[in-house]
Image (cartoon, rainbow, N blue to C red):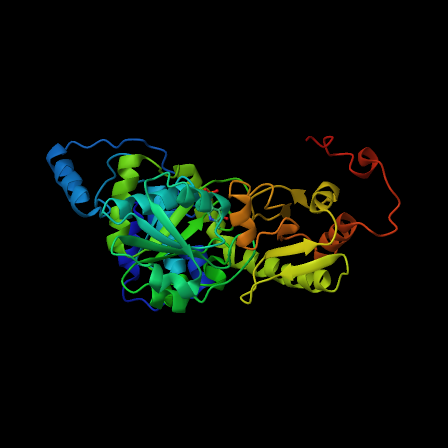
Length: 406
Ligand SMILES: *Cc1c(COP(=O)(O)O)cnc(C)c1O
C-alpha cells in the first residue's frame, strides 16, 4: 500500500535516526519494497472502490476524529498519498506525531484559526513581529478572530477564557527577533502555542521539543528551497492534526500532489542547504557589522541564513543596485534574495504598528543562498555604494537583465 501512514508504523520501535538521515529517508521507507527509488506522484482526484459500504464507514470515522482514512484513498481533498509522504517526513523532522499540509503558509495558518474558532475559542494572543500577512490576517480579523498583541512577558496576563491560540515567530520575520520558546510555552498554560518555524527550520530548532503544540511552516521557503513551489504545513499532535484535516477537507486549502512531491524532494537537501547558507550568512554578518555604511545588523543567536540590516543611506538605492542578488520578496531559496520589508513583505501592516515592532524604514532583509560568499559580498559591497566604483551603464553591467521596471 502506497501510504505514508504505513511508514510511520514501520519505524515504531526502531532506533531514532539523525535529522540528516530522516531528511533523505522519511516518507520513503516503503519505496524499496515496492521496487521504486523515486517517490511516485499520484495525481488522481478520485479513487475507484467497489465497496461503498466500507467507504461510508471510513468517511464516518473521518468525520468523527479526522484520522487519516486507512485503506485506499477516497478523494483528493480528503488525502493524497504523495502529499502524505511529505507530511510524514516533516513530522519526523519536527519530532511531532503528525503534520498536515496546505496550499500555502497562509492556508495553514487559516486552518489553525478556523479549527480553534470552531471550538468557540476565537481569541488569539500574539507577539510582534510576525510575517506581514499573518499580522494582517489577525489584525483585520478576517476569519472572525480577535487578537491581543503583547510581548512575551505579557502573555499570561493577556489570556482569556476564550483564548484558543498563542502565536509567535522565532526568529521573527523580518527583524530576526527571538523569543524563549520554552518560557513562552510555559506562560501559555493549557492554551496551545503555535510557533512559526519558517526561518529556523527543524535543522536549527525544533519548537515541539520546547513545548509548542503547533509548528507552522511556510513550506514555500526553506522546505521547498528552490523558489518553485508554494505550500504550508502544520506539525502537531494527532488530535489537533485530525481537526486540521477536517478543516482542510471542508474548506479545500489542499496542497497539490506535485507540490507535495517537490516539497518532499526539498526536504532531502534541507540540512545541507541550511548549514551551507548559514555559514555564508555568518560570514556576511561579520563583514556587514564591520562596514561603516551599515548602521545595524540583526542576526539571531541560533544562526541561520537570514540577515536583517539597516543602512545609513537610502535602502531603495541598495535594492536598485544589486546585480547577482535577486531583489524579490520571499526567502529560503538556493539563490540569494533581498527585499525592503517596509515596502513589500510588511507593507500591509499599519506603519505605526510596523515601526513599533522594530521594522524600521531603513531595514533590509537578506535571504542568503548557496552562491560563493565572496561573490555575494562583492555584490553587496557594490549595492551599498559609497565606494569609488566607476559608473557602468546598466545594459553593459548586466546584459542579461531586462531594463528595470517600476
Ligand atoms: C512567507 C511566510 C508565511 C506565509 O507563507 P505563504 O507560503 O507565502 O503563504 C508565513 N510565515 C512566515 C514566517 C513567512 O515567511
